[in-house]
Image (tube, rainbow, N blue to C red; front, side):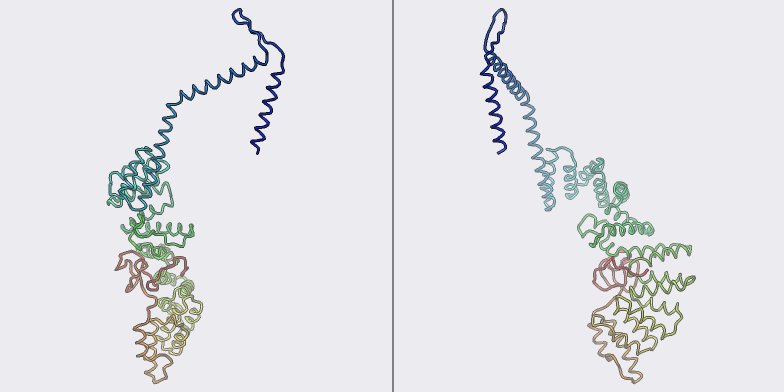
Amino acid sequence: MIRLILYLVLAGGFAIIVSWFADQTGQTSIVWQNTEVTLPTSLAIGGVLASFAVAGFTIWLARKFLSWPGLIAHNWRERRRRDGEKALAIGMVAFAAGDIKRARRQAKKSEKLLGSGILPDLLSAQTAHAAGDTKASHRYFLSLAKDKQTAYFGQIGLMRLYHETGNAQDSAYAAEQALLIEKNSLPAMMKMLADALAASAWEEAHGWVDRLIALKQSEHKQDPLLPENGHPDSRLLASGQLAHMPLLAAYLCLFVADQQEDDEQKLKWLTMAADYPAPLPVAVTRCAEIEAESRPKAAIKRLEKAFVSLPHSSFAMQLKHLSGSNDGQHVAHLSKLAQKSGSHDDALLIVAEQALGCGIWAAASAALNQISEAGHTNRYYMVSARLAEAISETEAKTPTLGKEDALLEAATAPHGNGWHCAGCHAPQPDSRQQCDECGVIGQIGWMPAYRQLNDTKRLPG
C-alpha cells in the first residue's frame, strides 16, 4: 500500500513537471561554428536531461563490461568456498559417525578448496590421529599450536599424541603449555596428575587433585568429572583413578605425612587428610592419635564427629582409650552418638559390638533390636550369633535369635560396609595404598559394596 502511494506521488510529480515544461513558450538559441539553432526551451531542457540519462546508462554498461572478469572470479571463489564448507561439514559428520576413511577424504578435499584454516586443519588433525598417521597428525597439531586462536587445542592434541606414542617428556611439556593458555584445562591437569602418581610425587599429585576438586565444585557438576571410557581424556589416567577424588586426596596426604620427619609437618598433613570428606577412618585415627598428645579434648571431639559421620569400630575403640571411661560409660556415650548419626544402623551395630565385648549383653541386645530391617546384614547376624552364644552360657533366656538361626541368616544376608575399591568396587582385606584388582592408587575406602560414591557428602573433620 505504501509503495502504491509512493508510486502515485512520483507519477503525479513527474506529470506536473512535464506539463510545466510543455507550457513554457520561451526560445533557446544555440550557435555552433557559425550555425544558429533555435528551439523551444522545454525541448532543450528535455534534450539535456535525456543526454545525461544516456551518458549514465553508457557508463554503467561500460563498468559492468569491464568488471565481468572479476565477477566470474568472484563466482568461482564463492563456488569453491561453498564446496569446501560442504566437504568440511560432511567430514565432521563422518568423523562423528566413525567413518574415518571418508572423513579423511573429505578433510583433504576441504583443505584443497579452503586452504589452511582453523576448521580444515582441525578436521585433518583429528582424522589423521584417528587413522594412526602419527606424522600427519603431528604436523596438523603443530600448525594449530602456532595459531594464537587454536594454540590451546593444538597443545592438547600434541599432549595426547605424545602420550600415546610413549613420549612422556614432550607430552608433559605440551600439557604445561596448555595450562599456561588455559589454567583450568582438565585434560592437562589429568596428564600432570598421572605423571605425578607414576613418579610417586605425592605432594605434587595432591596439588593437582585439589585443583580438580576445586574445579568440580566451582562448576557445580553432579556428574563424575572423569570422562567415560573411550574418551581421549580417560586414557590419561587408569580407569577409576578419579572415582572418588576426596578419598584420593586424603590418601595422598597420608603418603606425604609418612615422608615428613618433622612432627609439626606430619600433623599438618594428617589433619588435611582427616578433613577431607572421604571414607578413610585411618586418616582420622592417626590425626587424633597425634592431637591427643597435646590437645586430648580436640582429639575426642574429632573422633566423635567422625563416628557420627562414618561409624567405624576404630573410632569407638580410640574414643574409649582417650576418654578413660569405664565400660558402661563408654557404651552409653556411643549410644548417644549413634542417635545423631545419619548411618543409624551402622552406628547401632558398633554399639552392640562394643557392648558385647564389654559383657553388657542387655545393651548389646537393645542396640540390635533398634536396627531396622534394612540393617540386617551379614555382620548383624554374626553379632547376634555371638550374643546368643554368650547368653546361652549363663543359662539365661536369649532375647535375640538363636546361634544356629543367626548363623544360617548370616550365610545369605547382604554385606554391609567394608573395604572396597571406589574404582572397580572390588572388596579388599583392609585399607591399603593400591587396589589388588585394578591397580589404582588411593581409592580403597570404608564403603558399601557395589555402590556409586557421592563426593559431595561431608564426612569427618
